[in-house]
Amino acid sequence: MVHGHTSFVIEWIFRRSRFEEVGGFQRFDLAWCSDDATWIKVGSRQPPVLVRGAPVRWRKSNQNISPDERPETVWRKTNSRIDFEKWLKHEQYSDKTCPMSDFLLHDWLRKTMRPEITFLTIGQAIQATSRFQREVAGVGTRGWWTLAKLLGLRQAKLVRNWWRRAR
Image 1: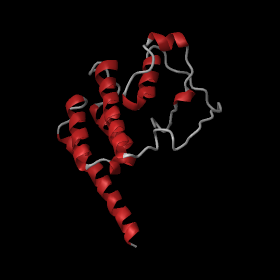
Image 2: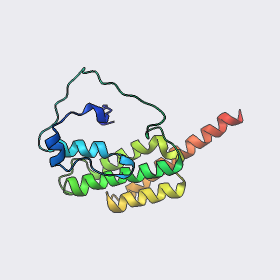
Image 3: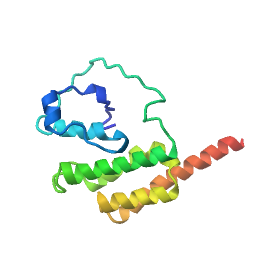
């Protein structure tokens, strides 16, 4: 979700020639964040046109990757999110022209990981945060604050689930 708008792959219409010109879909593991990166590439010369109120049909099921909460899948999605942010900051834009500050990149990662954080081990959360700081945004101690928030959310959810089962 960006600026209150959730986007899905089927909402984007563009010329095939432009799609091929930018090299097609940006590749990330599980194709997680690949659609967002591709729209950024396709729209880099000319912003997309938004058609408000146009109906879009979307089949949502448990067979899609989004609701997959298996620990190994969540770990791969987490790493793909970091790969996306690394690509955004260092490849799509130079470090100085990236439209998102290090703080905003951190905030986006924290918000998008929130629903899945309970499926990561503490070691994985530390590893993901360290990798993010090393490869994407060197924000010093603020990165550890983000990790603390993520782990706090994880612990709060684990305690809440335990409490519900105990009653």
